[in-house]
Amino acid sequence: MPIAKGVFISIIGGLVIVILVSGFAIYKEYEARLAARQVVLRYYEDFQSGDDESIYELLHPESREKLRKENIMAWMEQLRETIELESFEIKDIQLKDTLRMGENSVVDAISVQVLETNRDLYTSEILSSEIQYLLLRNVQGEYRIYFDQRRVLSSMAKNYIIIGAMYIDGLGKDKDLTKGIEHFHKALEIDPTLIEAHYSLGAAYLANREWEQAIVEEEAYLTNSQDDEGRGEAYNIIGLAYQEMGDRAKAREAFEKAVQLNPESPFALNHLNELING
Image (cartoon, rainbow, N blue to C red; front, side, top):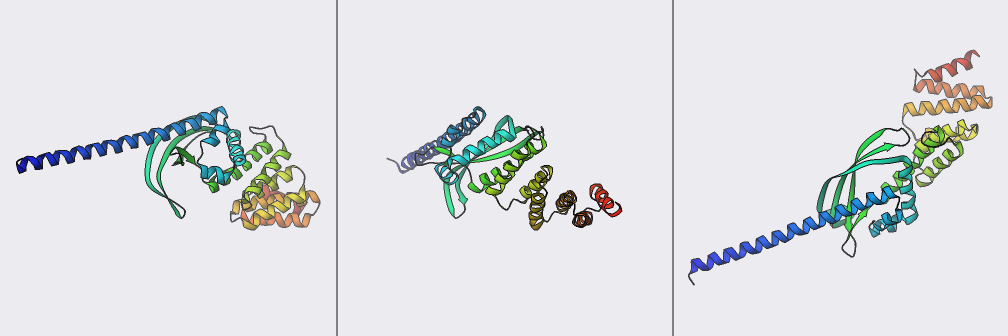
């Protein structure tokens, strides 16, 4: 065989191999994207139908182990209590060859970006947000949704505050101060550092005429809050509680602090003037 012909055949053979390998890689990528898409679509279908058992089965084993089934069920129920899914659209699917998760590296992960449109059941507003889902393979090679434990628990705590506010304000729920207070306590059980729960509890206890508890919760909020406006409102609640308890001196002290933080607050100024001139 002439040398030139042999070289030509070798080149053609090499190109065929490259094309076959590239084609196989493209097919595998398409297959992975399709599998991830189907998992996310099924998740939304199950969410809308309320099939939380099926949602649990869609989760990666690591998420199921760390979060536990009861937390997943409670979280799904919370989401349905606070939002109504209007629509969703898968915007992007990206394959991640290697993904860093803490101290570990995960290979063959997929990120799915979804645009959600929801009706907020507390405010009745229509809101759009982008949600990113991470899918990892299980031991059977199937893609499953991975939920980060810290993010889920943080979401649960904040959702309890929202649901509590719905009960307190009678928006999206029948007004029920006791249930509102219960939900604020649930938020603190999950995340004791969530100072917003202390503020909300103080306001709820004030509305429920539990003056001493209102003061305790607002003081807990003040210990950790750096927000001047929020601190001013907390002192207003403390001032009202002391006023209802008949302690005018402590009520005046609280309203003075509220005015220092919010000098133009009509509420604090009016109550302070009433105590000074009354």
